[in-house]
Length: 173
Image (tube, rainbow, N blue to C red; front, side, top):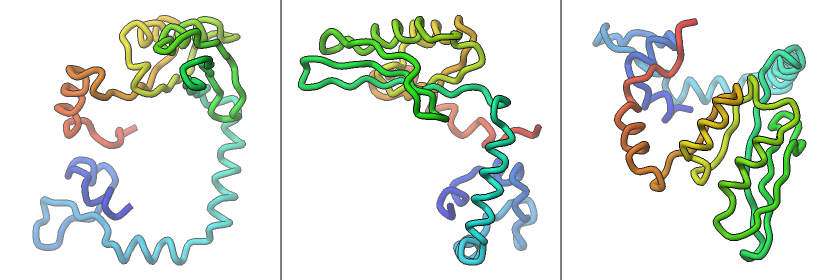
């Protein structure tokens, strides 16, 4: 947490209401390592877990579904692409992967066959699924996506890295 807080931009620190630096009032200072250590040492972990569980329970049905898709192959012979509900771990769609490299079309087939569709869902996937057609299918189905960009999408990765420091960590809602 300490290293994460230190790496935040000044705008992100402002949005998180970090204190102003004593010698440089225009700058925000992240809490010290000792502050995090003291917090974690003294917090009632059971009470925190209980409060979080109550909140999660109160949000049942209120939070949009979150779906994760991932393919697995057995020695390039056979495989499946599974789409799972991240809240329950339950598989909501399973499609066979017919050959090596068949994960992308299998994912599109699985997404098309999800009971109730993708409306309001957030679909996540690894870099293999970071494809325009897959993203378009999710959006056209009423969902949103969180797809990992890696070297398989060099231009997109370069654009994302260029924007990395511009977006605020939190919104002011």
